[in-house]
Length: 284
Image (cartoon, rainbow, N blue to C red):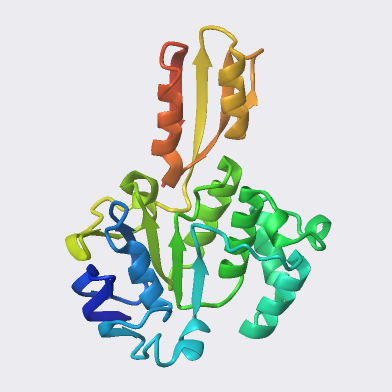
């Protein structure tokens, strides 16, 4: 459990967190939303023990600040901005495995499911990887360990659709892990969580449960038809992993349940082209 009481953090006279209090039960999946400057990142840094602060922060009755090494053994973290690490990928994986006691083979398994093959990049500096590769590697390190708390800051921001699908499936396989997922947009993370907390001015502006929890492991079958062939539409469908079933006029593929709104948003850009859409719900 996470217990926060009267958490206050001041930077140069400005209260970024203002007497913030909340509790997050073990196994909960929480979306932490809010505009820039709302206090999301500062709250995360306090949970990771990086900032001194007023008030109390406890993770399973331990202080991340006073007992940081012990607490962080049970915390996985995926930052929004990858760190500028110059060490080679292989060295980074070995170092992480040694520090956390994790099995490096699990990193490889998770990376493979995300579509990242580690062998060709083992000798490449982390900082030289593409944005998508960095994100997949950091997710692999975070999810390739046994942790009680997983903190993810915009985890799917740089992922292609197949990797997003794999990420949703991986998260669905961790039912007992407490998750805190930050985002600027609720629609990006709502299907993954059961509670939404919105910060504004360092305070809780909204704290609500998600009424209609979606099956996070669901995969929806989709078939759609268009009136004519168009290269831009074809590229968009290929990015989603769809296949051309009829000379560019009929497309078939699968959409992860948590990504359905994002997929429909993609289709909306081609509303004048699409003549039929069939998105099949999973059968119970």
